[in-house]
Length: 91
Image (cartoon, rainbow, N blue to C red; front, side, top):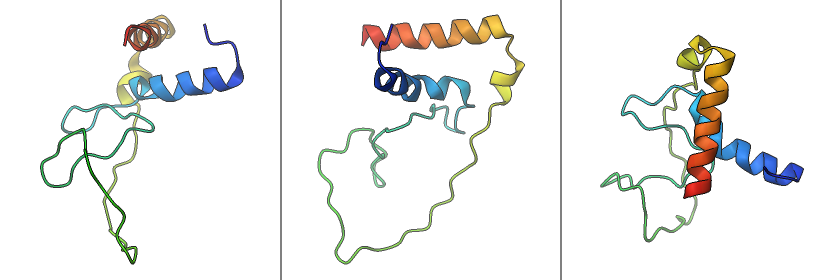
């Protein structure tokens, strides 16, 4: 069990996505996740750099929803979060 407020906040960021509905492609929201490659959609970008001068890019970002989460009972929510915490501990 995390002891400090910082450890608890880190854990919250890691498990928050289980309370969110998945994206259309099935991926889960993850706070702090690195961006995907815009050309090949790879999850691990080996090299990237900033543009000079910086350029603005418009991107449509869907709203985070919690439809499936709201349908769960409190007991089911506890289990979902506990399973996510356990998975994090194993990795």
